[in-house]
Length: 401
Image 1: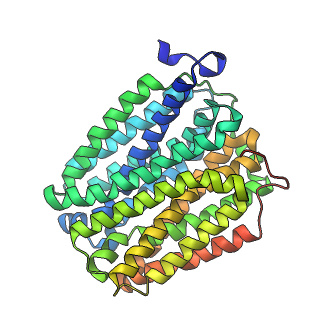
Image 2: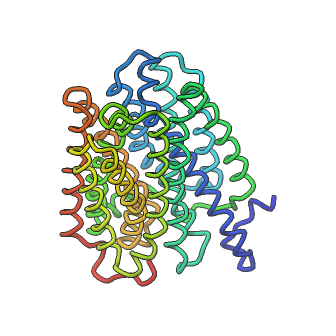
């Protein structure tokens, strides 16, 4: 089969084909984010339909993160010699199954079952997609490949969360998951034909994970990822209830603002390649995390002003769009030769932090109000700023990364 030909062994393979393969991975991150964060735009209707509070409904965001944290290193250990094309297709299939279960869920535990399955797709796809994408392009184009694959996050936010909220308002939250299932099938088919064979380069084991964890730059990157992810999702998970009940926006206005958030995130994602090249990953990272911290903290205090709240949400999206790219480039610069192992560890700690942020943000949202969850997010983002300020991925900058 032509789609199974190893690109790395074919010097004459067209650049277009390579980038179409990378684009298929970007589509994978798009549908992944669509699925993982879809409940954020539907938190209130899901909670009401399944008889739980908004804070409890946040478990639909938290559970995939917890499972993904375990799945990333476990998949790394138990798929040592498995062709990465096959593995990525299996993980994309799990996203289809998760959406289908959510589509028919008539109780909260059944919904959580689908989200549990999603966790394996989240952990595995994040761990393997970006290293696979780098393998399909030249070294000089590596940062661009990371940006393109990470752009699926922003596009998923643009098309997923706001569109899901809008569809949920018109046709019910199940229809949002139904349409997401159809999209997941389409992405799977695209990947089937676009992805080349990518044999595992090394037989990775527990030793490789422990080795990469000992690298100073990687450890610092993981620490930054913990603060960054917990900051984002302690606040972002409860953005829809905050906009609905604190800012007093209508459902259509919420959808529009969430779309603006996603568009800003997409802009931030593609600007990152330029800012990292001009200022280095450390300064680009620091600037965007600081913008995230200030946006979330100020937003928690200005819910009475629709204009101010909307502006801050857009700035928030611009900042967060850049952060996954910065974190991946940081980990790559710290250990280029062991990027796949470093990526698995990054997914592990990122998803644990995501889950913890969503959980503790939910506790605050239920007991103190959504503004309290925003304050927690802002404080954690400031801790991420401090971590970046005192850290560096490596002693000397890698040109072009």
